[in-house]
Amino acid sequence: MVTEPGWYPDPLGGQGARYWDGTQWEGAIQLGPPTAPEEFPEPPTTQEKSRPQWPVWVGLSLAVVIAVGSAVFVLTRPTGEGTKAAPTITPTTTPGPTVSRADQVAAEVQSSMQSKLDTDPDLSPLRLKVNHVDLVNKAGNEYKGIATVTTSRGKSHDVAIDVTADGDKVVWEAAPGAFLFAVQDMPTQAPAPTAAAPPPPPSTVVLPPPPGAGPLENFKICPSGLSGVATDETSCAFADNVRASWYSQPGQSVIAYSPVTHQSYLMTCAPATTNVWPGAKRCSGVNAQGTILIVYIN
Image 1 (cartoon, one colour):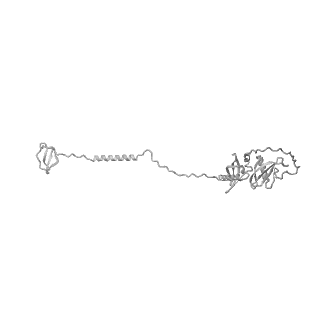
Image 2 (image 1 turned 90 degrees about the horizontal axis):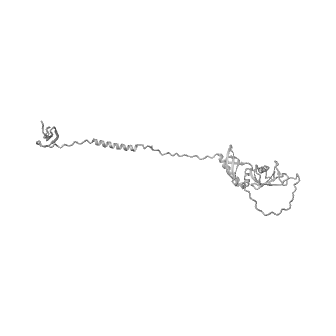
């Protein structure tokens, strides 16, 4: 049976009426008695079914997850250069230079030698300066080496020395006549102009004494037969050294070493007339005590 669309009593027996759309009953119920079907019945207002909201929420959640993941990736991805650790500075201690025993002894010898050259009455006029001392160890506490000494005119000379270092006591020794080079390097002074000398008196001829009468000057001939001494304060060993120094460096002044006193003395030599040696020379000097030293050399 075909029934026209319209409101009809609820076929389920409920109160009110239901709408028949011509094919099926709508779910809406109209309260009140049913009315006759309208000529142009309006279908009941149907509520549009709401769309499900879960796809929206799922999309938003995915967007949030993607954004958070991108931020984490950007913040944690490597930049191509690893973070370099700050360099650790390790303090190092450079050991100080060590001074050898030979260098220590050389420094003491330089100081002692300079003091000797400055205070010795025979050597101080030479105004020598010890620039450097270089030593090598021979054996035990014995050393040998070279002392570089400069004269007042700036000329350097190497002096060979032997050194004995016994604890704090250092003793150095140079060969006899080791400083004669300084005498030759001393500046010579021009003689002062003098007035014209008066005419010489008539010359007097002095005849030599007969043979065997002894020397003109009173001195004792040394065992070597090549030197002599005039006083007991002067030894024949020193007189022989004066002669050796004069022949090695001939000149008006020489420096000779005394093996008796272990000192060097400045001696001034001049020709002397004797009946022992035709070309004799008389050399004189003064020691530290003021004693006059006189020797004769052939």
